[in-house]
Amino acid sequence: MSGLIGKLFGSGGKGGKAPTAQEAIQKLRETEEMLAKKQDFLEKKIDQELLTAKKNGTKNKRAALQALKRKKRYEKQLAQIDGTLSTIEFQREALENANTNTEVLKNMGYAAKAMKAAHEDMDINKVDDLMAEITEQQEVAQEISDVISKPVGFGEEFDEDELMAELEELEQEELDQNLLEIEGTADVPLPSVPSTSLPSRPAKKKEEEDEDDMADLEAWAAN
Image (cartoon, rainbow, N blue to C red):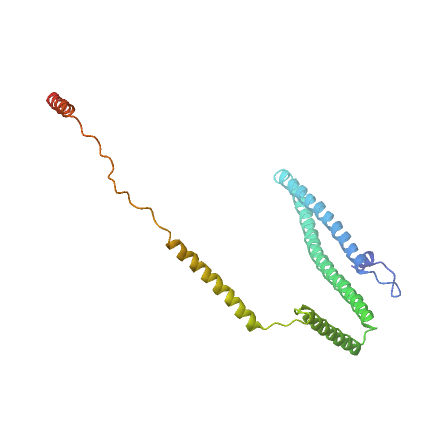
């Protein structure tokens, strides 16, 4: 086990420099790949020994038993590798999480330093004074806008009551004019009804009426 640890992290001794998190993670991944290849090899050997035991089961029991023993050894090694892989995977994930936390804390430290540098030349009292001055200037600007937006008569002032009275007089004059126009149209004479009667339709001659009666009688007889 100590040889494996030495292979993973080097053998620099007590005074050696500790590996970085990235280096350790890379070593663990390489070990996982090596053990995975070992697993594939053992699984193939187990299949081969099982096939040998089946072939010699009735013909050569000694060879079959030896094949089964080798198969058991391979299966034991395979189980050990499975447990080792689980341990290495757990250690790698923990190391990756620790490395992530380290990077996060490092970046947060950079941000804190940058914020401190940004606020280094700032005085809270000066900030309050500046905001008060900005507020005051905004109020002045609003007052100026209010004054500018008020209508200016350039010295001429008018009485609102007099203007309304004059407007009412104009409306009354227009109303009176309309009434006069309506009364003028009422005096226009209408055309008289003609006294002579309209010409009446000339009456049919006696002979024509007789002919019509005979035609009606013949039509009835034919039916």
